[in-house]
Image (cartoon, rainbow, N blue to C red):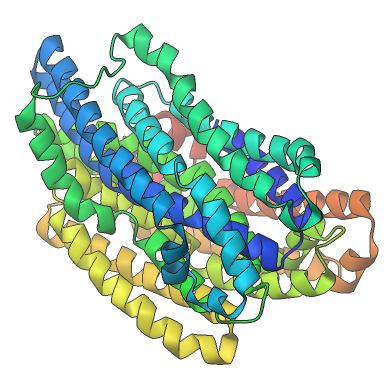
Length: 508
């Protein structure tokens, strides 16, 4: 389901790039969408879900159905009131928020006004999508992963539909506002879509206060530090937006389109993996089964290295061809491809770290430890700011992307170190041999792609069909070289998929 969502997300961005191109109007929309989306990542996916799922899992394991319903109803009431107030403030303070998050727009009054106008339309998205995240947390706890994973598809379909069919109803200088209405509609549809499935579980939240103050208090206690810890990547991206607003027009768009390609493997694999293992880790911690906890986390970490490293290498080696194939049409120029390719390489460096943060954070959150990740996140955040200031001058927008990647590496390294040193996590056997096989697979893949990928000048000259055929062939060839190498060196991926309990042969 997440793969389908990401494919449609790429199609959405292809359409936006072709219809509007990187420029002032798309820069304004990205900021107007990124502010509520940033809050979604913090309050919904980042803070709330990471606090809500472990508590709900504990209630499901240890308490009766009435107590579970009471927790859900009281949580829905508190969350709903907070979100309504936040939405009202956000809509009224839209110009101020644009000034805070994109201060460079003050140099262009028209762009600043357009961004504020769209923010008033997109801001209610945080209300709808946070309630959607609560519904998704309930479904995930009850092992119904497909429905929450499908809901982002509705966002992409809404944006595609509004871009294609609503745009003509706006004047030329206001066409991009159709995308803002697409965001608003998507939030409402995503929330309503999950209602039938919650009804089937008899857990559709009916907001009522004074049902379970103790449980909601625990969620709030856990949530406060995770608001920052689980979403440090998003905070870094927002810092990038602030600085990029002072750079050349189009810089925000170049960062956005390159980030979208990195988000594809991150969403398809990283977020999906972290979402699936959190309920299992929470249940294993609740049941005091440390061996099962270690096996689950070790299994997840192995899959991060198997998938994230070749994905990052592929984005670096095929960055410009991918951007040319997907986006270089109509308003999206060859120069835009070259600029976006620079930031794509920088973002790709941090892809494994972005995924590791998701997985390793789940190990802390499942133990209901939210203080440690927030301390680490503060260190990473400070590192990102320093690196931004050091790298933005020589590398412009690509320096911002590289700073985000390097700070993510610092974050992931500290999470892993403390998880092992203080939380008793111990990896399974055979990691040296495992990493050696992956390194060999990457080397063969990289050599093959460096030798066989056509020169960049040909990609610009080819038509859409020729680009698509060649980029698919290059991607499949690289993947085939990598996975065949793993198989020939004895790494049995089928066994890893089937079981988290690796045998000695599989590990060594």
